[in-house]
Length: 510
Ligand code: AHR
Image (cartoon, rainbow, N blue to C red; front, side, top):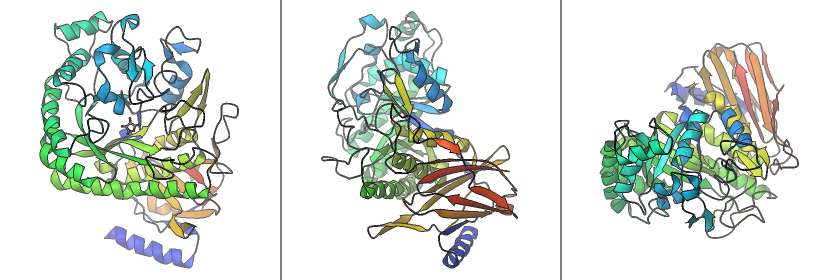
């Protein structure tokens, strides 16, 4: 009720002062934003694992025990909360025994989903769990349901988590690892409606019930959070059937949603760069649809079992591949547009964070909406990386709801909200993140600081550039980067922020 009144006031004020957005809040903290919604995803796909994360100990590219040093350091800086592996579609073709033991003895396999690339399995279970330990992040393991067996899964879980004197545990010890690893989250299948087995929700539900029971029995009493393979974007029936049939056997259920500049899975999705305003607008507009999607799936889940969280464990922009890159490797450049998609999506995730368990952008290196791109021994941080870094302040912070009536960004007769925002508080400090998605107009945002008992701007940062098409190349890696921002001022108890077109700003307030 209080929030409705605030929204009403915001509407009235906006009508009398155009292009100015007044943020209204009662300053009440609502819930904690789980850090895991800033999760990442690393699949055996293209150059994500090989070349991106792992180059091997004998590589000329600087590495530590085989992990690329530049990429590792960039990811460490990002405070990754959780990493999903080994897929994706690849997970339902993965047989874990291929990826353990002496590297020279590991079999080569064909990556059937992603370009038929031959892989040498030099990155496997031990390399993944060691990477997560070194990054200080949680582990999210995807188990093969599509082409595996319950026994394969049980053996794998024993290898990873077991402590007893038995063959799978002894194999791990023989491979150099005495202590068990920790599995925090465990996906049982991936896209089981598609690449993970082409199943109906009814058929998958039965399999899910079978796998999920053993998943806890064989994980040495560590009870990883079990994630049921969820729906593709607007398939609400999948969520409903799974919830009705399996809710007692799961802790989380997933959802995948990709934004395509041109929504045509079979044809051209639109270029990764060199696009026009049509494809800037469509991406931001379709990104906003995450709100409706998450809300509706959460409503179904909560209507059946309030314990269960939703994981958006694949999200981001999917364009045509970068011209000249290897077919099936899903390598794309990353522009200011993609960074704005990331910030507006996080604002939506924050709003629903009380019912979200985890979200994982696809993917961390060299695939789709990446954090970093590599070429030989070069690496660039993408505009999306910078948004993740700016937004890291919201991890584990208290979410403070706001109401406001956003001005519109109108293009070709269609209108969407021009301003998106998040306010949170951690350790007595407030962080306000604001995005102006309008391609041409500046937007001014104000906030009555007394509503949150703050008085001053401690610091502010901005990410913007001249064109939505701008990106960081290997020759010019700092075109789109975060810089300090002087457009946020606190005067007479009011914060005023002048947001340039296509900008993301984070302000620290005290
Ligand atoms: O992220 C790329 C692919 O997209 C994943 O392998 C699959 O789960 C999804 O279709």
